[in-house]
Length: 326
Image (cartoon, rainbow, N blue to C red; front, side, top):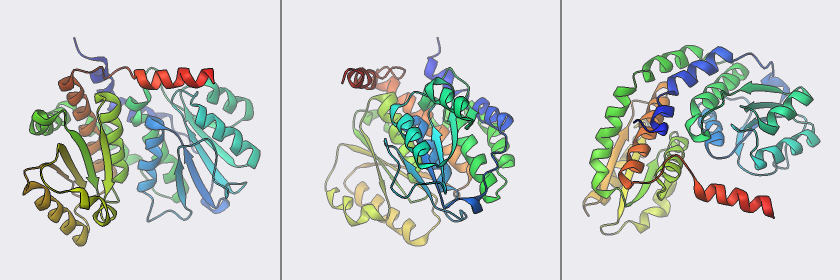
């Protein structure tokens, strides 16, 4: 019998197509705002970090991503706040909604239901509907695809054709499962070692996403560092053979950054540390979706190898129960 997490992941192409088919223009003009804030947590929040990374060079206003209860001090009537909560009941995001209303911010939302959907319907806030029935961390295809279209509309970038091509590509799940299996086999013997992900700046959000999936699905420690910043501090902890698997994710786009990755690989491998290279041909929508999809499969394979329940998250559930009591 197939695992429900595996079945959910096979719906990635469907999620992209759903968001493409159900997108409608929001009408917010970049000229009418001074900044954009995307608010969300966990699987609902990472879509904002991923989407904003595509617009770093072209956005005419700054884009900030927050995972907290309140907005930064500068948020006001000239701020667009995009709220992302798959369940619609994430308490931090609901708190940001209230804060945004008090400050007179412009609002958009992405949710499948819950209190956030009710609030949007009552106040006339435009909500992009997410199909229910998934766990937030397994529903990234919805939120990321919607967010890319929202930002694309605002900054005059046509993204629909690229996204449609991605949906077609990832419909062939076997290809990505095979790539993930190959990566898994290279780390299978060290599946209980700590995982460290090292990315360039472009792929930082992708690295964070992989860490989140390893943490939630495989119940395993996984941390992300970014080159060149980590070369000024973290690198000093890399002496000898460490009980760690290193994943390098980068676009090989900047000569100096590529040289730093080359040095790091030599530094680690001379002491027989395990390094897995995930080098892409660039930083495009297709590249990012495909890397994410492959690594999502890898997280499930690691979970299966570790014989843990990738479906349920008891510690998170316990925390929510605790917070309900205080």
